[in-house]
Structures are given as structure tokens and as C-alpha cells.
Length: 254
Image (tube, rainbow, N blue to C red; front, side):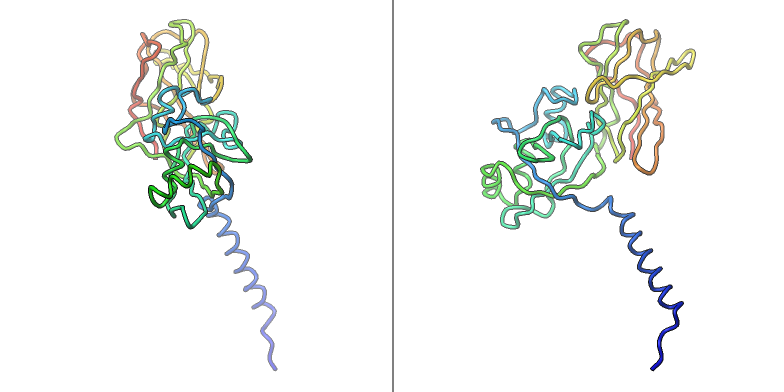
């Protein structure tokens, strides 16, 4: 009886190893098992007091399909990230689930997400199933990171109402797009081209004391495990910026 040459065993083992590594490389598309609850109030949308600092925007962005996150909050780095979340009970839950934006920090009963009531109900197959899910309060889920997409919306800077022109500047980034995190922000003078790194005070709020005078440019570093790149807006923030105003960056990120 003839036996295969040892080199064939080696080639076969190499093939299996490469296939395993390939599967691991694409595991960014894999789902992670966890649990989710919903905000215990009558408001179907999110909260206006979320720890990301989005304010009323955090309650209405993405049609109100928003969520608080526990570990995924990552000291504010996770603010603005999007996740596909779907419950796993085949009697009530759809295969699609719901895509939510992280706008708050929190956990409940070993959960990774606390969804708005609207988002929680949208994981169901039917209206009746939505009522059943909401009555359960906490369900088993699976989730994965997905790109954020806001058609016809550019990244926008909202000047925080607590800013004090011209001595103190605080802002949040609206409509964060793509699948990377904003891990650093630079404030640059458009006249002298000097830049300095800003502090993440909390959540998605970036601040600086004694901001330079004149028009300002905000550069953002978008990062993931494999790559990072600086995004430079087309539009500047005017030199006479005002607390509460929003300024369109003129750019989108895939």
C-alpha cells in the first residue's frame, strides 16, 4: 500500500494554516455575543444627557437609533461608532437587527448596550414582537462594528455652549463617518500654520484654553487596528466663532 509523500502532508497543513489565518483576518465581520437592554423611560429616542456630550443631537441622530455602551465606550473613544445589533431569539428577532450609534456610557445586568426604546423595538420581526421584546427588557444579542453613513451630511463641528469666546473653545464632532475612531484632534492656525493637539475632556468633547485668533482648522486622526490617517477639512471655523453654532467641515469619510 502506497503512502503520500511527507511533503504532501506539509503542503496540506500549510493550506489549512493559511485558511485559518485568512478567516481570522476577516473576523472584523464576525459577530460577538452579548446582552442588551433599553432605556427604562417612555421616550423612544435616546437621552439628551449622554456622556458623549452630544446633547440633543445624541437623542435624535440616526433617527433615534442610538445606544449607551459599556466597555465599547472606551473612555469616550467609542463615541460616534456604529454597530449592527441583533437579538438571537428566532421567535421574535429579525436577521437584520438594527444599526445604532454610540452616544452614551452605561451598562445594565451584564449588557454591552443600552438601546433607545426605538432601536430595541426595531430588532423585532413584527410590531407584536416589538412589544414582546420591550416587555422582556433584557435580551441576548450579537453585534459587530459597521461603518457609519450619513447621506448628504459632512462631518460637522458643534461649538459647545460652555465655550467662552475667545478664551476657551470646546466642541464635539457630529456625523462621524466610516468605521474608524477619532483618536486625536489638532487645532491649527490658518495664518501661521501652527498646530497643537487638543485634550479629550470627556466623551466626544475636545477642548483648549487660549485658542488662537483668526480662522481655525481642525484636523482629525481616524484610526483602527490596521491604519490611521489625518483628515483635513475643506472649510475653516471662522475667527469669530460663537458658542452653540455648528460649522460644516466640507468633507466626508468613507
